Image 1 (cartoon, helix red, strand yellow):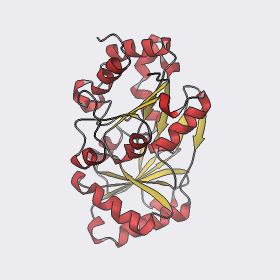
Image 2: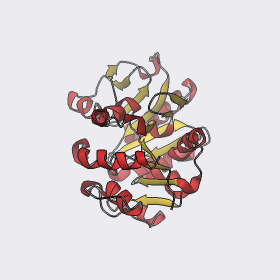
Image 3: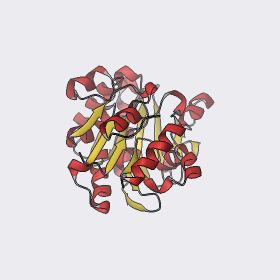
Length: 277
């Protein structure tokens, strides 16, 4: 098996709780991947600025040039040193999404997050505890009075609901607006609204074209519905054992361990016959 690109979701997949990963073990893995000319891609609903911060420790090992990034669930694609792609929601689409939310009786208490190129925007009623939590995933979180008056390019809109209700709302929004936008769930109670056609699989295709890598040379890992397109597309695709039950109904090939047990790293080591720890 020849693998030239390995892409992993972050939350619930590569990362353990509190954004932790075994940095020493990953650096060792990344060195071996570099020797084999294998790219590693952080593919996440998070902003790329946040992803770069997560992997900044790899700079001490001279390994940052081996990591590429798919951010905002595929809205932005960057290599270690250049942006290859970025796409944004149109103002009318954002207006329709927020209007849908305001007319939904069960949306009264949910949080709306707009992810832009200059910052991340939430309404004034968001508590400091909520803002602190969002700062784990989004840069420069700001409270604003009117979400529709923001002067920025918006990569995506997220609604935060109880975790077990996410898929229900993904379906509900798709039924109304699915012809104009892409809707997906990305864990932690987040329902993400993206430009039409945006997903991680399409984003990886941009990196593949850039490097001249075919589909059968790609390995991917994920745990949630925002990973479905890439899990379905690539033969070497692995669902995390800790994924929600509905994901196990649509994808039955699992990584060797959970996110809390370095499952992504363990699976790569075994599948590519790399040294362990």
